[in-house]
Length: 215
Ligand code: AP5
Image 1 (tube, rainbow, N blue to C red):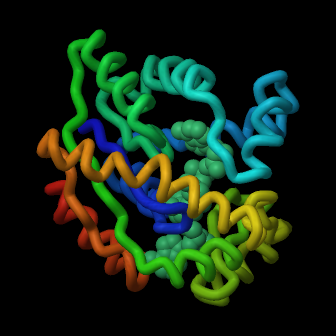
Image 2 (cartoon, protein in one colour):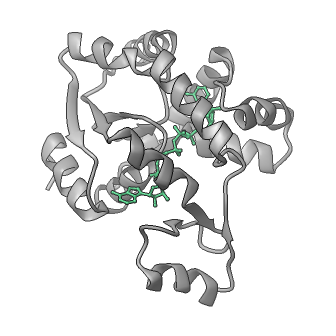
C-alpha cells in the first residue's frame, strides 16, 4: 500500500505513520526527518536546508524530489510506504505522480489529518523528542510515565529548532498557502479520505486504520 499523510504541522502525521510502520510494516518516509538527519550530519544539503527549515519555509522542490526518489528506491519501500510530509505543494504532487507512473506504481490512498487550529499550537510547542530513544513525546499530552521513561533511559527531552511560536506561525501559513490546495487535488483524483485527528492518539489511530482499511 502506498499512502500519503496530509495535514498541518502538528496534526499527528508522524505519530500515526510510526504506528502504521510498527503494526503493518509499511515504512514511514518522513521528509522532515530525512532533512533533520542531513542537518545533524552537516552535509552540504543539510547546511543549505537548515536556514530554510528554521524560517519555516519549504526546501526547494528539486532537492525534495531527489530525496524522495532515492528513498523510494530502497528495498524496504518496495512493498509500500507511508509518505509523511511529502508532497507539500502541487508541483511536488505532480512530480510524485510522474515518479510512480515511471515505476508503473500509483498511490492507493491520501489521508487528511484534520485538527482544529488552536490544538496545533499546543501540540507543537509541547513536542519533545527523546535524545536516547527518538520517541516523539509531548509535555502536555504524553502520559507522565512515557516522559519519565526517556529520562530513565538516560535521555533528554529535546525541542525541535522550528518548534518556537514565530516559526510555527509561519509553518502554519505556509501550509495554508502551499499545501492545503492538495486537498482539492487529491479529492478530484478520488484518493482523499479525511480523518478527524482530534482526540487521543489511540482514538485517532483507530479512525485512521478504518479509513485505510487496515486491521
Ligand atoms: P516536518 O518535519 O514534515 O514538519 P511538519 O509538517 O511541520 O509536521 P510536524 O512534524 O511538525 O507535525 P506532525 O503532523 O508530524 O505531528 P507529530 O506527529 O510530530 O517538516 C519540517 C520542515 O522540513 C518544513 O517546515 C520544511 O522546511 C521542511 N520540509 C519537510 N518536508 C518538505 C517538503 N516535502 N518540501 C519542502 N520542505 C519540506 O505530532 C506533534 C506533537 O503532537 C507531538 O508532540 C505528538 O506527541 C503530539 N500528538 C500527536 N498526536 C496527538 C494526539 N492525538 N493527541 C495529543 N498529542 C498528539
